[in-house]
Length: 425
Image (cartoon, rainbow, N blue to C red; front, top):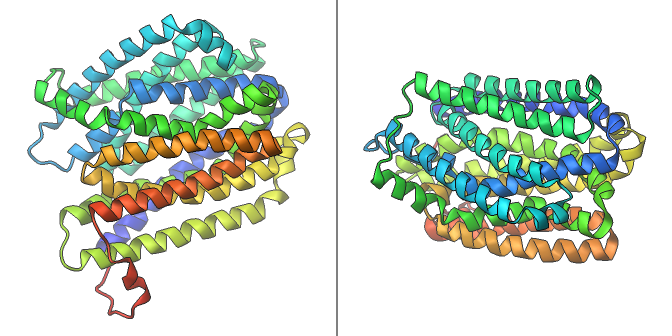
């Protein structure tokens, strides 16, 4: 029961950090929706979306490689982190060159100025550095440091953005500039912390570089597919319905992400626990993990249904009149994020056994399906079609990952329907 108590304590701390971290933009959302028109909010949304897409190519999932290698006692971890950051420098330079060469067409398709597209590349790299620092805290169970760093970053990000908007009269540029400045600042703090704690050694070990690339390159299709699932709706809505509709849709998505943030808080605590179970597995581990996962899945669904039922009572007061029509979008996104949380749980098995190629194929396939489904539904029923597509795609994504996890590490799921003695927690 000690392990269960530690898991619950970590989950509670991550949840609190995520709630505080998300509460800051949540409570400032009424301010932003009243000072930024839907078209301006749409530009901000497209900038953050582009940063997310570019991170698939600049970041190469190096934080995931650091997380998995933490459980390998034969690894020189500071040298491995140094190799990850070296790979990041090279990949960022290559992506910067490609975006510079294609800046014109990209600017026309995203409605973001060319200069800001180049900035987006650098911001995506700063996020990768921050993620490396955060994941090291996560695997070491330094939950308070993890949460405090996140909260400080978000607080300064939004405070600076509001200052630039209100004091200097900047519109969407103020919000984007706030994201950029704080991104560079906290990436610098992350690097300083890694150096000060001797968690990085600046040498490019060829073996570790190859290991990072073996882990990260197969995940590029996975990351691209994930971006298609999470972000293609913004591009499609902008293309079919205009940047103003994208802004209103993004407000609904942000409100619906509350469920995703709470699920993510649990998964951050559950991930190290799952890896530990898999590393020390015995004859009772399979049944124990099945029961734990089943409880987690049920909890995600209850959370989503409760949120969907409660949201209409608060929504108009939070987002304001010009964005109130996005309520159904927020409800659907919230429900879809329950399946996203389930996916993260079963994907942990594939990450542990380093079967990322399977996950990459699944994500790319589902991502392509997501684009087609979203485009069709938006054409058919309008912007609400994008939210329905999100729910369907997240469900398919979870089921696909669950089937792959069963092939890699079969679990006795049928035991849930048979009376057996409790092997303990």
